[in-house]
Length: 118
Image 1 (tube, rainbow, N blue to C red):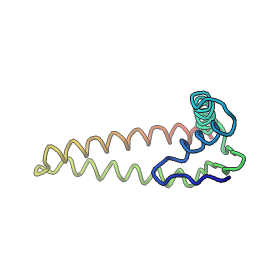
Image 2: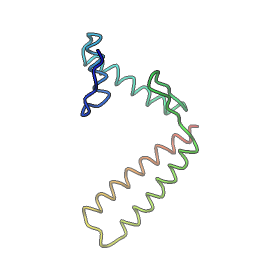
Image 3: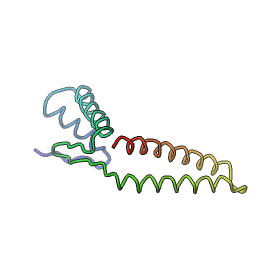
Image 4: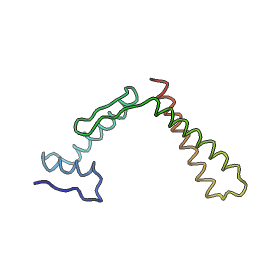
């Protein structure tokens, strides 16, 4: 019998629950295994250009696309810096802009490291 995933339930949680029921293995054990697999996959993408999950798909790192994304992030930094120079900016807007700027800088750093490894 096929069970449909509730719309409000994340796919990962649904898969873990179904595997637990089908295999009679605790949710905690399956969660630990699935989490380990995803962490391993993320780590692998830092050193190789593709990772394949059987039945889910192949995840590829494209250098040209990464360079375009890097440029987009850098343009975003320039835009946020310009917004911060506006004297009429509210404290709430300033805080949001600073947070956005910090996030963009982090993404730029991560992407530059990855591009330098390839």
